[in-house]
Image 1 (cartoon, rainbow, N blue to C red):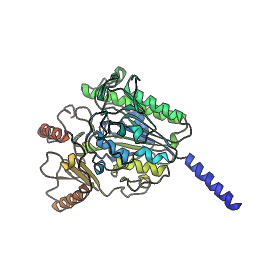
Image 2: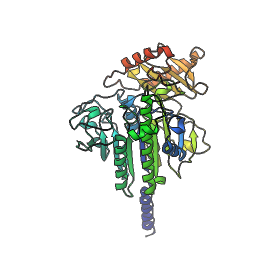
Image 3: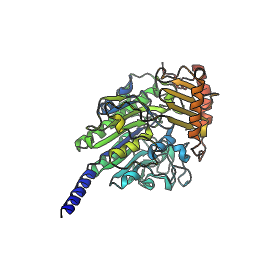
Image 4: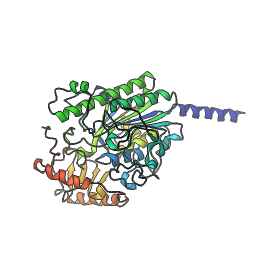
Length: 460
């Protein structure tokens, strides 16, 4: 009898513990510059809601993604693995009947790890990791999807028969006849509705905004709010970011109203560095598509009030691969051995000075470009560069002084480490035009010392 009572008590504790599992909200922006939020130094527009989110948790000053542009970076976030390990190294084409080009179907994605614990999951917004039926969100573990399958979308209009930027909105597994009003607002509306419907059940939401990715389309009222910005591309971009900020505020307000804020682990980050001509990555070098810091270092925030100490900055390198293992650990779920990131929770404990990563690696275009970060050192050889360059990021975060000639032994050791990592990866499963585009962009950037693409002429 006593044993049975103890068993039932244990079962009750387990059930209660499961009922208290945190919700997980991943907010992913698209092409946001590393400086383009007030808490990261933006001066020409305000982001009070993103700033409050950062103040309620941890603002990472050296947050990285695994690739310098869209789809491969998202494949890393969704899988918790280096996307090159399963050949996902380029943007897939938009072909609705293509069951060959997309994120590896044998690799489990984020919602799969939470499903057994009773989580309901939803993906809202940009998918961009395969358009064929086998690659779509609900085939890959999400319970619900509302968004678009390709690499971008018009913010105001769609075509029921259109593709890519003019495609219809997909609801779960089907193209719908639902209209859009302003895409950033619409996605937040859908996310809020989903959260309302879940009641006490734990949930996982992957909210992938299109903003501030092209096309440069903003609401007139938001353009008025940033009318002091003279450059028209920057002004449109800023207006789009103001809208993102408003919608982050709406989401947090909804969590507060439902009493869920302290039970929700929120991540906020961009999929890659800011795009040329609109975003601000200063003082970092380069932009989207580059292996310099401006292409891979992004705004990166984690907030879990009551569990993570707020009003903090964290200055050691972290990776987007860390999202999945950290969320699983927060939920008390096993962290699969196949995942490559780190559970950040112990490293975020006050007083812990250890670094989550000994090294971080990047590769683009099958190895035509690569980078490696170890402590303060970064080795980089991007597409079109004749030899690797070495930078001390503690002293030179802008990557202005190449130290490769001064430290040849360090360069050789880091190159050897890169080659060992590279040997574990697949060849890209499909091609794209990045290497050609990068060579052209680098040639155009030569007159300004390869600091950034010349479209960013408004930068001072």
